[in-house]
Image (cartoon, rainbow, N blue to C red; front, side, top):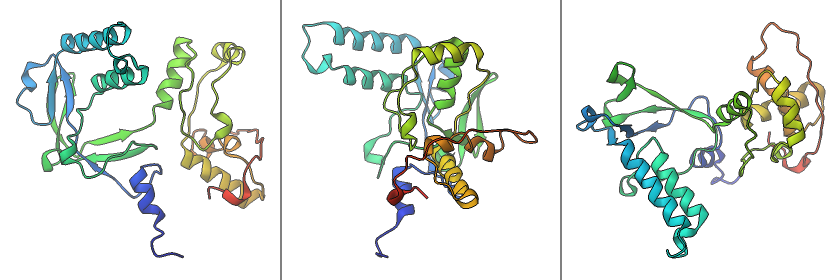
Length: 246
């Protein structure tokens, strides 16, 4: 094998695989709104709700007014500017950053704020300091799914990133109208858990199943239904045998 072939390094750089034994170390500056006591805290960025709402209004006004330049009317640009305002973490100074990438998988990191592992956290009692705070990064699928279920809203998928290519499309209205009335809960799984389920089926049953099919087995292997007898439907083997993920 080529000496430059280092797949783990590539996965670490892309942040697309959860490594159980690796905890990234990050530094974060959180945005706190309408709290005058946080002005002198180094890992806190203070702001006001009024300023944020005003900035949002300016961005939307520039998008809809026709007398502005074409760049300000670009929808993607408007969304990026809004995201910068809504992001609970302050933007990283590029001069202090060697390498940055988007988090593409669920993982945990330890916050090393100010190089002393002390982070400011906000509780009901107000601001306080805690050491070795863990930050959980996830793709937000569970939150979105629960919101759909509880509020009865169908939110279309926008550029989903998953190995389960059979699940990339949005749910249809007819299917949703049935599920929202009869579905009790939604369980989501990571791509790593799907791959592990695919591999287990191959090792034990000598069957190749596609990622979208392995989704049914993945939560069981994770222990979602301990001490229960569970039946699953395994359907689909649309897989490129020359490009298996395990």
